[in-house]
Image (cartoon, rainbow, N blue to C red; front, top):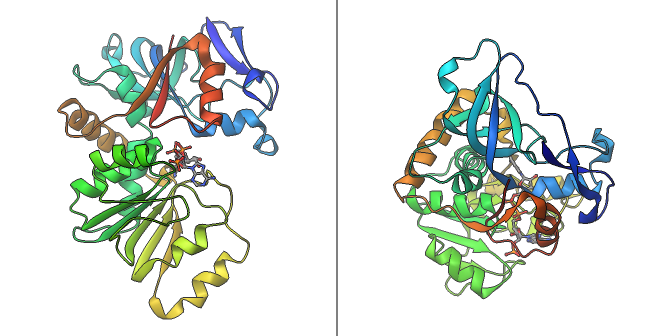
Length: 320
Ligand SMILES: NC(=O)c1ccc[n+]([C@@H]2O[C@H](COP(=O)([O-])OP(=O)(O)OC[C@H]3O[C@@H](n4cnc5c(N)ncnc54)[C@H](OP(=O)(O)O)[C@@H]3O)[C@@H](O)[C@H]2O)c1
């Protein structure tokens, strides 16, 4: 079967088409004939070599989420999965393939009205946004700032905060055009990447959901209201300054909280329930899935170039 693997760390051209034997599902796994593969930000980070120290070796097949039809099941898996169209988490990698294996615990059936492309924009990111907001103890009537809102996690967080009754949903983004698109999804105030602009934006926020981190993180922590909570769900701009901890303690009298949040700490069964609910909501048109572009699997290198250039609003999807 056709797959794309990282044959050399660095630029997108290090990603090359390879011919791999079709996998067989092991015990507890299903085999999925992929119809859609989500291109995630972490795929490009792994390809760049930035995570080489974590044991990612050349020849690694990137891609974490796919959607398609189950064609075979491993030992211990109910045969009724065969023939069902599903979303599946393949792990840190293994997704850029025509046939993917996934643990049945990480597989969720798809409603007939939701396309496979839509499913891979939502399956991973929706859960991060949902449980990230829960980790921040977000409550109706609170003001929320979503930093790095133009990616698939931010787009979901904006929609969930707005639907959840936020008093204001401010976003950071790099262009007015993206700001308009985010307003249509529920944003009430649009700030630039450094937090400037945003006429009439709230002076402070109860919750900051941060996909970006990096050197500007402390200045967004400063925007928290007393008892405010900042939750970092990503680090697309790298780590915050080394003295960020000092910043938290300096604001002692405001009782502020900072937390990192990974959806990996949420029990798998809970993730699956929320995914199922979000897929159903998207099928009913209550959640918008933003597919930036669908490209053939053969265009994986081009997809990574677009990601590296920061051109993507929402998610690029590869279709085998
Ligand atoms: N917590 C979890 O469980 C979990 C799970 C999966 C992934 N992640 C993490 O989530 C992140 C990817 O999320 P995503 O796909 O939603 O994000 P993304 O699309 O990679 O980035 C989100 C937005 O951030 C803005 N941005 C990019 N670089 C920036 C910079 N240097 N400074 C300020 N803004 C910048 C861009 O929008 P503008 O150009 O409009 O500003 C971009 O669209 C990664 O860090 C990944 O490791 C976390």
